[in-house]
Image (cartoon, each protein chain N blue to C red):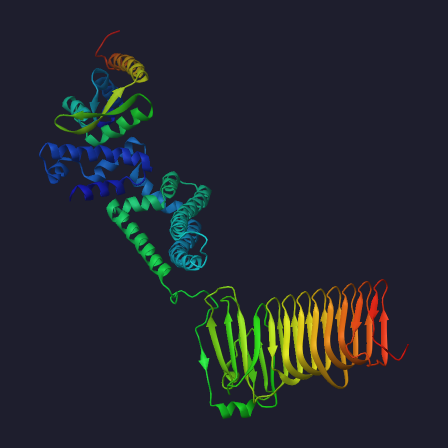
Length: 497
Length: 105
């Protein structure tokens, strides 16, 4: 037996004493060992000189009025079946929490630390060093808060245990209470007798490792290890030209809801249909193409196997984090029946579209349709402008609230009709040929120049209207102007007057 | 001398030793043990009890022939208590002596 064993055995034997009293008694013996070394005695010598730990404990406990033999008998009575069940439930539930949740939360905090770091690097308004220190300090605080929370949890559990123990009567429930009171993580560290150096080195090493990993991630150009949710890698799919043209001819539709996205539609000499989407990482975006209905849908679900066979699709992460773009390139030998695009705040540009139907919706972005041919067209906007230039159409419906509407060089077929509805946006028509034109505004002004139509109907509340044609020999069948306070200036002859 | 008898007067003896001179645990034990055989482990709880009741205080003192030791020292309250205990003991002895006929009243 050596000093350590002797003292440990003594501590065990004195377990019925509360912690402080036990420490006091043991400290006397610790002093004895220290003195013995100065006197040139070995630990063995002193232990032989001293009473056995069990004998010491018996004497000490007697002095404290505790009969050790009896107490041990009582302990079994005290912990009745109920007591044991309660004890087991409470202790095991706590242990499960500590052993599962705490390591998990520590791991999670590590990951979140790294994650926060990689995300923070996109926000360059804080200097790098400040970001690093800030996030690291937060992590360290988080770590200690977890330890403190664990300790708090233990304290609550011991309170509950004590409360239950009070229910039972027994001579030594007090000592059991003391034992429970002494449950503590910090005390456990002490009891394990791990040298402080080891603990410090472990904590230091893990913190340094974390920091180093964080720094490496921080300075890595491509954050491919930690990808924020929603990010995808670049995919490009291509197929033989003749196959897809055969499949998509005549009934190829584009329908979609492209929120906050800049949309460009373009007809090219290339023989591939190309859809390019550069997008923000948190915007889910997938495409669905049904071969049977020949219908291409773009919406928020991941079903892109079918259409990928026919379209060259390119996903890419834009280096500029905030801009989203959809670029559609259609081969000139492909005819689209219907084009239906919508956006919220980014501009839509359509050029060289030839098809039956064109339906464009937007909220605040500009819509521009250039050099296109279609039978039915509709453009809706709230505050963005609508510009249509160089278009041949049969029916065209335009709705706007505050955005201006500009139509330039519009030719139309037989029995064509153009309807324009605006609240405060101005309407301007230049070089337009159609059968019927109807314009309604509230406060928006109407300006018509070289508009050659057979029927013109203008209704405003306070908006003014101007109408001039270069060819003064042109006579309208029907010209109406209805307004409450708006004025109408025109020099266009019509059959009514 | 029986253990029960010794126990009753240990507190008195320890206080008496400490009133004369401050001392540390093992030294107190040796001083008591010289006169009457006791076990070391009975002395320590008594010292602890004296401190707890405020009859003694402790302090650390450097030593030339060893590590610093925890010295015990009586307080004013301890000294008063010692007087009371001493009187009690003398009266007790006299009563017992009278009862067993060793002394005549």
